[in-house]
Length: 400
Image (tube, rainbow, N blue to C red; front, side, top):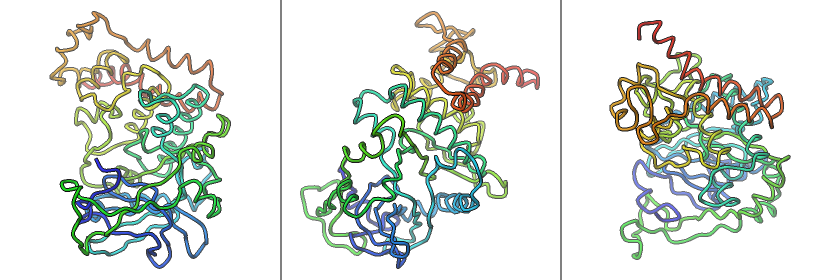
């Protein structure tokens, strides 16, 4: 994979061609590139009205047609402007503006937010090695508690995030938002500009086209300065949840969208998603994903440590941690005989790790977390425990 987007990203339905010093919406001057994903590019911009710097996300034209990210962002912006008091408010990215631009590749939705640091995944891999995703306890507990508060705030705003994983939680520091042009240049470096290349013919020049720029910009952030700003000490740890590409507004119900195409990594998916019992995410599926996230960042040998595991392996580990699935899912799991006998005993180890394992994790948390942090996790663990116990009884009581 090329370190920057290839020419194939710039076609009808694809990315909008952007160059350094372009001005979008007659307001946002492009200063540098912060990154890109499969469906968007992200830029450091100067707001010519407020004279502050911000992050500008420009969605591809195809993504703009099908994504609810802008509608969710507008909804969130309105709630943020109401200044509702909530401990999770400070752990969700601030939305400054949304707008639409027209280009040679179509119509593109744009979202302006405050500037954030690196993702949890990028930070932990740089600091502690690519073979791990767990943080030291003093950092992990702050991160996990803050994510829980942030998701609770989104739910208070009537929003289901739909994809709370390591890549959608970023470190933050007020120093980023208040940085001078000189300081931002130290952090992100000078824009690195190279001729655009093709995936298939990367050694040959790309012919000019109105649909793509002749040059593309590398994301040039410098890891040490960002780490220095965002993670100078455990006491300064501050995270924010971002990226609402998989989110939707569940309250009021009139805002519900058509059946959802789940794109969150398999290891974060709740059983009701894996067994196709729901057509869109719910607050409970966010809470389940938080439980998985907590295990990943806290446990060196978490079963959910890799994105490469398939659906049946994810379900296997659910049983190993929580015990036998409720009957409504157990009987529908076609691969269960590969891993367990009819009573839920693991065929390879001749044992299973039931709810007791998870309770021991929760007990360990109680030994090191503050009262407020314990309360933030209690909801998560109660949900996990319920899925293995109370839900089973509830389904049986209903004849399910």
